[in-house]
Length: 252
Ligand code: PGA
Image (cartoon, rainbow, N blue to C red; front, side, top):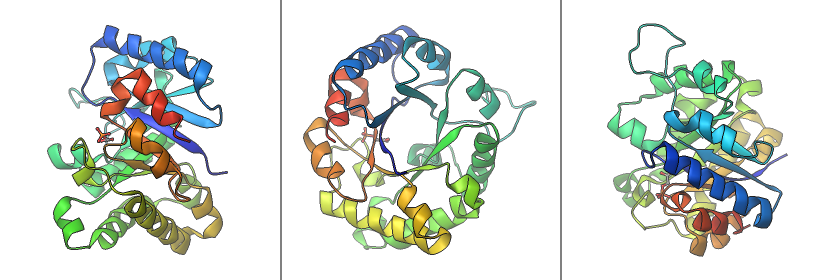
């Protein structure tokens, strides 16, 4: 069954105590006021994972890392493996975010290793895709995104593919205050779903949750989430304020 999902992506923000405070605030607000058919996930820095897991009701709130290593273990100074992430109690990992592709050189080849390790360790990948502005201006976004999917998650087995959450995030909308219009979001989400149907069949395409990301706020969430192929959001800036995050969750 396709789920409604709102996932926060805190990026490189908050120290540990600020993070715990934010997680607790989200926990408290959502316990009282959030629609209970929405899956809420907090994507937090590695340093916060264990503490955030302890600070929230994990039956209602999922916890995600924002990355994991492309190797299982060994002499890779500074890396955090999928197994380590799982051992904190986190159940999700954001993979393929455009900031990681752009600033840390994450290629499809690297992503495929991360996807395999995340899945082997029982983590649910939140797989990100999306085009830069110059591609959108040439109206080549569908070709671009299809290529991202073909190089990565379309190489998974059907069984593994079924475990994924997908996030479409146009790079030109991330942190810019410029949101895709509701029509633009629906159009490309429908395209992604159709592309998945062609590859894995209608039933699997129908079941996968496709989130929108890029300057999603309480003021535009409702319109975006009203689209039939938009199953929620991956939220950066607005996930750093518990009230705004709740406002987005209640956009459903
Ligand atoms: P934003 O970021 O909501 O701040 O635009 C979204 C994301 O990068 O996941």
